[in-house]
Image (cartoon, rainbow, N blue to C red; front, side, top):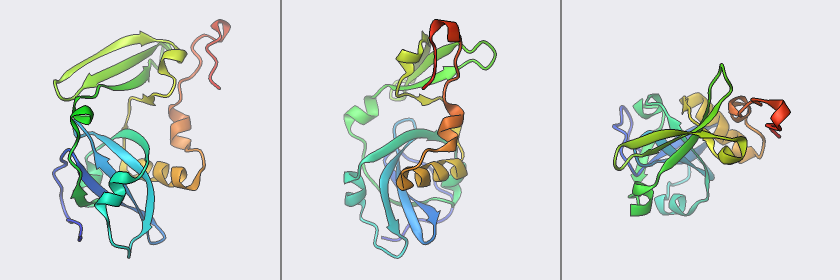
Amino acid sequence: MAGERGRLRRREGDVVSIPLGDGMRGYARVLAGQTLVAFYDLAQREDEDVDVDQIAQAEEAFRICVDDMPFRGRWTRVGSIPLTDAERDAVQRFFKQDPLTGELTIYWERPATGEWGEMPATLADIAGLECAAVWSAEHAEERLLDHLAGRPSRWVDDLKPRPNNPAEGDQIG
């Protein structure tokens, strides 16, 4: 299936092909709210046929919010996998850290209803959550490459929470 070139209107369920260099491509899928994107633990040569069913069965590597730029011609739409009711109704949770006070919060949103909020958090509360950030195409692509190569991402490391009060044991491992 040939991809759609040019400006895309990002839609829930869209599956996109992501150029990774060296003749390889990765894949991602637009989730509820249209800014949240799931990236898959799957890479193929650019000359291989795209099988959306194979992408749908691939393990999810990570989910992050991505800006609009890659959807304007950098990433190519290769198909669609409709969201399940559970995916559409899911509450998305991210952590935030105030740059001045170091205070941690959990930002949550339910795209299906437009509800959102923020609540105080500890390091234990945010374990496993992504930082509330909007990623550029270049940084998202580099993170996917790092994941596929099995190496740490410098962008993830940069977004890790920093100790707020070391005397209270808020150490980051």
